[in-house]
Length: 412
Image 1 (cartoon, rainbow, N blue to C red):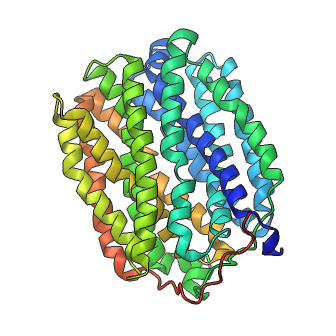
Image 2: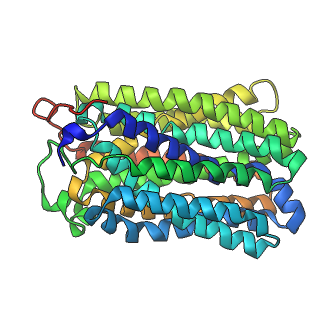
Image 3: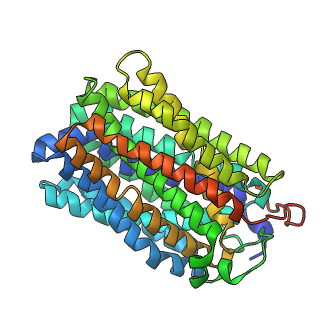
């Protein structure tokens, strides 16, 4: 396809909006968990298993979707997936048992996997390599903004209208955005890439020997374990351990996530791109350092009951989210464009099977046996592990040739 017909900023805006809705949909549950728990008489472990099951199916679906996206239209697969998950979200109206809710939630995971596996490759092909961190920073603004919107939507609507009502609101825009994606033009795969094909970068079997890919993926897995557990349980922690109301717990954490997430995503992408001009391991360094700095602050946040608690949670969340853009850029740069969707699918499988699939249930189990506060020790340990892996991975970062890379074309 002629790249002059590609409208990169329009495509980025539409895909970012759909990504935002993706995170609204999955985070609404976290906001209404106490109401779901009361209606179905669930233990903390059962409640955590809803998210683990969602991510488990999401994770298993990704390896099937990735190879399809490398061969066929990425745009069409995104559209089908968005309609599928939006339709399933509406089925919350007929979930009246824990089993029905569990089935609905797992099927939504399959639908969302179609988007998360493919969209980053689409975005990466819209802009030059030297802008990749910043552009992914914009795309991944959807994580904090969508997550916060989910907390705020559920926290404000559920107490007065029931926990099912926020899901209806979250589902409706998905159909409209799916229609908008149909009007996008698909960019040429790898049109801005400067790195040469090698067996490690350009073949599926080569990924097992690709240390740049493996270290960025394993570092992301440990980060995902930490972030996934914190997102699921922090509102509940503020509600049950610090005696906030359900509405104030979700509002407080939601505001922290949206403000920190916006600042961190943009700052991390900008810093990674700026440092990349000086040394090839910039994306790994920014990610590793942010995780390490966040550890002592998170400890203060969880074991403080005074005025320091909320500021400490905010600072810890900022450093935890600062790695979002550079770490995703590191994964994308480690794989050739023609198997990039497959590489991201493998990445998704690994980061979730080792990350936020087990972490909510593990934290719920520790909470049942001891206390929810003690359960937060697990994500702190995961942050240390992530930092160590990423510092080690710095020496395997690929040498991106920014001077010889093609320049951006087709501006909207």
